[in-house]
Image (cartoon, rainbow, N blue to C red; front, top):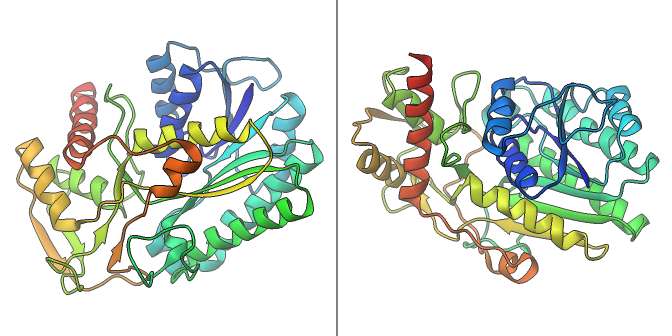
Length: 346
């Protein structure tokens, strides 16, 4: 089977590619490399011992095409050159902070780009898609843990983008019940592949917690900025459901195999069901890395919420999936990725 992975060079996408290739799927990656690096795909190829190819017109196990979902003619080129059996849609701008600053740019890239993808899929009769949504669609949830029936009330443009894309997918399914759609609302991915060859490596100053911690621990930044120390949580810092990226990758595979059985619309949370504060993560990282991380607590960041963690019950029922990794393993694998990459750069 040929699987198109949009955003496949990114943090989650590269790990999804490893899982797909390991299981024998043929993978075509569409990515504009705006916040990723082609080296991640070369390293995916190393992990699975498969060559990375750049020619769409030939049938290969692992192919990369540099473009993005805003260029509909390029999406059509992919579908014209290869028979795509299913799509795993991860492409998109993903910073809450940036989305508040540039909401129009985020809408055009994330929502309009996704509509381009869906329209092309329909024209080429490809009706199987896994969309990587986000827990940000829940906003400030009324109750936690959060299950899939919680209200969709995003409080920032990034979350609104995800909710809008979800609506488009629901429309597709309601108009044509032959679609096979999984909407995966994942929580906060951290960790890295055990090999240390792929992990989270943002191009600019990171917006997410773990890569920020790693930048400080490795000496690239002087201190960690923690946004908000007065939330109604056990230590005043924001509480999130941190999940290992390999658990997320396996969740995408479980969703794919589930969809192949029959047409349906699935909406599933992917999380551990455990909430950890920023300081909890920091202490766990310091424990496993033996590094001291200097931090400063600043004011709250626009669009952030106090507490967000999942109820993973439905994921177990619908996909036979549950998270396997604990917080210390997530921190260990994140740090191992930095150590391996720093040593490779010496």
